[in-house]
Image 1 (tube, rainbow, N blue to C red):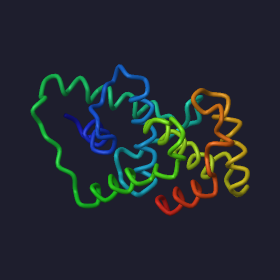
Image 2 (cartoon, helix red, strand yellow; image 1 turned 135 degrees about the vertical axis):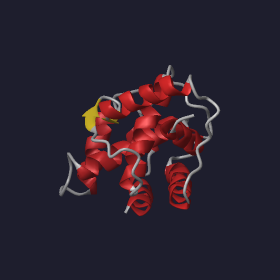
Image 3 (cartoon, rainbow, N blue to C red; image 1 turned 90 degrees about the vertical axis):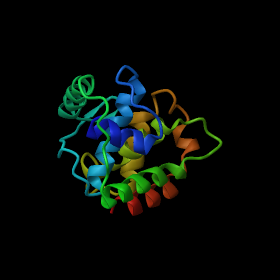
Length: 166
């Protein structure tokens, strides 16, 4: 198992499946969030795509890692105490989503990563209201986020994400 897939599995509590689109999206989001918390998983650059922040280099690294795994599948990754702390913070980060909603863990990370990306890039210096407005216009038309403006307590989400990242 490689560094990135091991990290994914530690955060998500599920095996990484490169053929599963939601797994690939979640990998992008948790790496962005972890690197925002100061963990160096590769120093990836992200751009805005339909489903949120995306790094082509990260995608290629995960593919390369997958090819290497087939030749050495018994290798186990041990995380440092700092990495373990980031994993714990990432697991706690998505608790702010309204529990009545049917957002999967993958979708929760997608929302948090999109919020962070917008705050640091497209809406930088514009305030949290601009971030929320852009998040609704960016994600609100995509299923399962059609009711995002009514299902997400944005103030709580902002505080939770902000405290976890900064």
